[in-house]
Image (cartoon, rainbow, N blue to C red; front, side, top):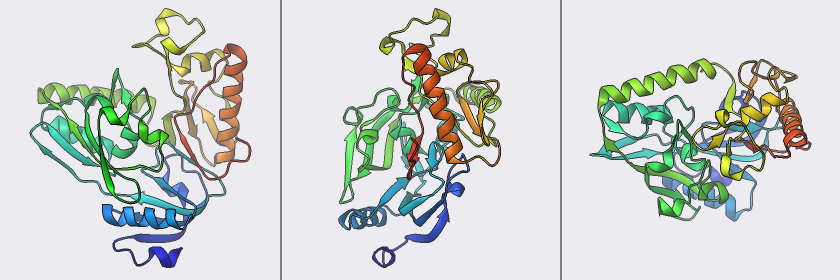
Length: 315
């Protein structure tokens, strides 16, 4: 497969690249091949080549919400790294490989309102759209105008409605063969000083909860929409129509639990991190135990926000 990909222009290829270097958790074995490019045509060609050959492959972004098997990935890992951000009036264009915080900073600096509540969320723009990232009652989908993506043959475009956004969901999450390349976001005029204060305050709060140096994916489990729950919860825990997964985790004694080098924070039941020397096997064991406890106590199923790459025999 290396001979098939090597002729493609601007495609950087590494063999046996440790994927722990490409995930915020800092765990995971090597990829047989890691292929990176910032060129959309090259990326589409590489994706199409792998699919035609029916060769094992996976596409990753910044690795914030990624759990890679200890055995690594016996195939090709593709990474699209284009990261340009530009704007024309209130219409902002951002490549999938742009860091989400850079996009937030870009818009706030220009007095463009709509993304400031996403401040401090780690990861890349493509992944934020893929998982419809959000915080403080707002999601990135509210500002998405169009999304340009590749199906491995050509570049296609969807409007906001065609992206079928829902809470932490999009059509791209349900159709993993479609890879986001670029997004257009439509913002509104705002007061630059006010937006800056809002963003800075949120970053301060997030950094206290999820320190930038902490090897974690932020919250490990999705919160619940109150309308979807069939169990009663105290009114005081409901936030903007959602019930934090942390509420249920706290009730089953999650805080401080650990498996090997992977631990649950003592101050936040939905924060799992690599305390040092943790493995993907440790993390999966801890996640499985937490899901088991919540299922037994409340009869509900916790759903991970993270994505898994490679083989996990015990999942």
